[in-house]
Length: 59
Image 1 (cartoon, rainbow, N blue to C red):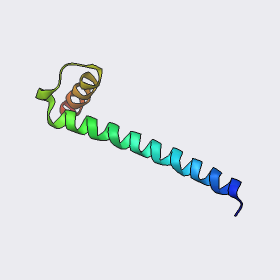
Image 2 (cartoon, one colour):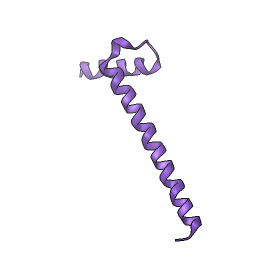
Image 3 (cartoon, one colour):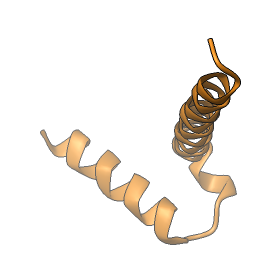
Image 4 (cartoon, one colour):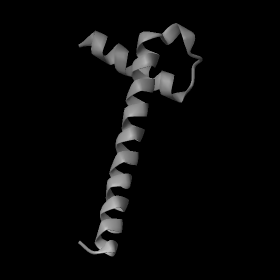
């Protein structure tokens, strides 16, 4: 395997890992916000979480 193709493979792996880490961080934040909603101020994410929880309760 050439050095160039190894570098390109590493770049793709790093992009994939960064995406996965971002998704995992967002999931953790939202899960924590749902579980501990009293601790959070009313920001846009909390409003979204609250709306989803209300929709699920009415179904």
